Image 1 (tube, rainbow, N blue to C red):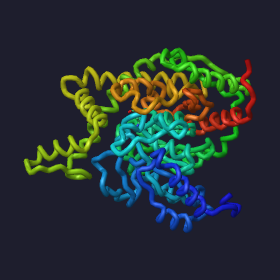
Image 2 (cartoon, rainbow, N blue to C red):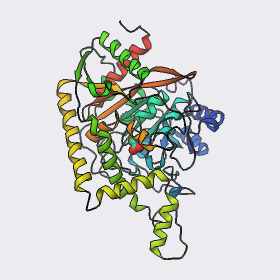
Image 3 (spheres, rainbow, N blue to C red):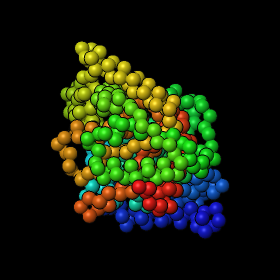
Image 4 (tube, rainbow, N blue to C red):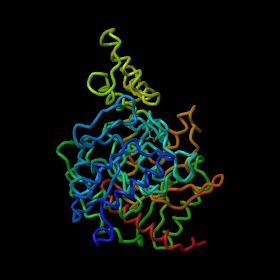
Length: 470
Ligand code: GLN
């Protein structure tokens, strides 16, 4: 419509602003937005660029120069402005996107519900009494509620895919090293990746195209050439081998309604000519334990930079520097972040690192190898994203472990460094609400084209409305 002159980028930005004004007081997806600047940028946008004039929201842990970057934490509240652009921010700008708003998240991206934000809870647009998922819950909710055309999130153990699944949007976690992490506030550096949350698979491909590629500022970013993601998008599903991990489908925790939706989708894909191949990923049983040792270990190290000296909050009662460190960290961090720092410090301590941290590293290698073997037999692996639809707000307030266990289908992709996509596959009814379910499509390292192709094929089958074959 933009290219045909049927709308203007100013109109698009204004429609987003209007949607936020009418809806965000109930949903709470944004921590901040700046439309004065956005309108000026929209009017100046070069429409010949791939994302020319398109407003894109950023999770509030991705730096964009002169925008806030609170990470959902009291530590960085009150006027902290990012002094520089993350590589993804400068790449989006170069593609013509308008960066106007900052979305809510679990503090420092730790969580699966966005309830761990120090500022507010974001609500699921499909049922305001439920979580949007997390940690990129704000990004998923604003896309679902038409309050942004697209958003970026970060995924360390599922934080793009799981909220996408809960909010009924598309979420893509790129392979480790595909997208630069420079300027993403680090949670667990060996697992973090930035990726898009969008309405459609095609949009996810467009945004990925804009942000993927090598970056001399991130030594873990890969020099491999970035393919043209749009060119293979319509390749269809015929002949594709889809792996179904037994451990995902036999899981006792998998909700029967969610299972039925995923199985229905698989039956339809099979009817379109995909080949379903049962396989086994036995180390799935250890993934949660491995992740909740490695991620907190890395987090405890990354978060040592918040000491009251260099960034954000300082609490100084005049009792010396050690008290200043301690009081700043005691008041700056919320309880989930503290829990992870304590856990991470413990598993890295000299007496225990062999027993926990090194052991977990070895198990991580096994998980990686299992996926490599599996992808010798199949093109993609499909299963659920989350064992249940979005739960109620406050339901796990006393038992964080319940949320950790629900990460079982997403975290292996981060441990193995592979890519994963969540695409909506219908809804299940709970107490009168129709709650979205996501179909997870995992692919080998750097096989984003494949999972996008499979995701696009699924959208077409889904939207054609043909009944599942019996
Ligand atoms: N839910 C996971 C956690 O709490 C994943 C978070 C993420 O991917 N940032 O750590």
